[in-house]
Image 1 (cartoon, helix red, strand yellow):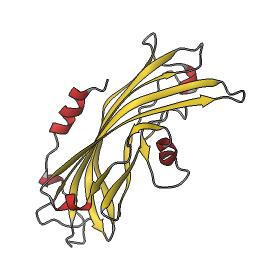
Image 2 (image 1 turned 120 degrees about the horizontal axis):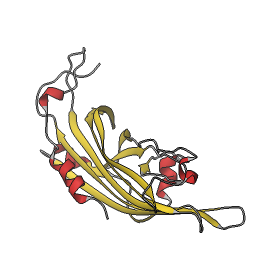
Image 3 (image 1 turned 30 degrees about the vertical axis):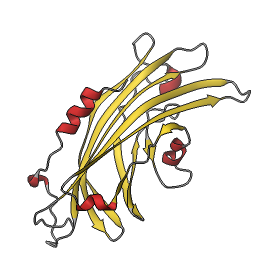
Image 4 (image 1 turned 120 degrees about the vertical axis):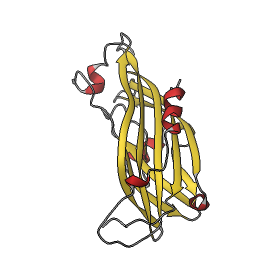
Length: 219
């Protein structure tokens, strides 16, 4: 089960901070919005029928700004922080070497917002969480064919991992939207035997509001 107390604690801290407005040298003005993405992931894995399995949990928050650039947006990151990261095997002492490729302690994943674009009446947020191993993909979405974010979507079994908001949301004083999904993958060897399985439930929340005051456009 997802840690909803952690999730909603992060959600409640969303606020407009005028002192953090991007500042550049050009002095020109444009349309900008403050944006936060909050994601929580809770999953399990098993490294083969005889190997041990385990659990993993990850939650993070990304904060930044969007600047309108014709039909797309320029993304400015002001902060990203991990709220929770934990991976254990059945004994609770880490995870098998099959997952981490021999590393004792997995490297901490990082949430990134790579691209924001408009298609018709919707705005799409392309994001990724860096994975500790190719065997344990974490949530991602990309419109590029063949990318990790595109391949991830093939194993979504319920819900949607493609966060988007209507263009009309940009005109509102504030807007929030949440997405839930289930993901599962089975890796098979040459003989067709399953040698690694993993799955998770995930929630991502988008919070956006316009910057309703004069500011200087970043250079």
